[in-house]
Length: 173
Image (tube, rainbow, N blue to C red; front, side, top):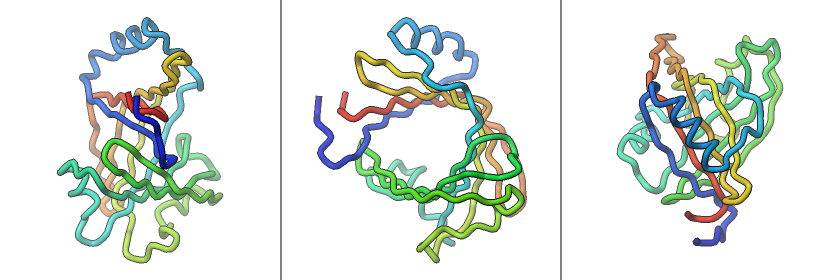
């Protein structure tokens, strides 16, 4: 296993059909994973520049890229306790810089990203997340279901039917 030398976290993401959810959960349990948190709704408001460079870099699968988001939890809470995150990807590893904020839910679409005047709100994602951990392998796993993608400008909602599984660890597997 390769050591993590830069406080980066190794992450690997997979997309599978939603009909496989029970099989995925069974396999995780069989492989020694256990739930570490209750399921919760995750919201992320992504920021991008006027040319949507972060979006296109993601579609192209570029190894080195940066994304900006405001993340909070829950389904339309009265007050949002969230974090602005600058997530830097370098090959198979990611590093996050974050800053916490509290604000009324009604103001989430009015937020500007701190110290980044050239990025603007673009997409709001919302999904239900399951959290797992394998203490022997020291690997976290998240399973995301019922993903909604909301265009911040026109409020059009798209539903993503598949599930997203992500493994996260401090060492390369």
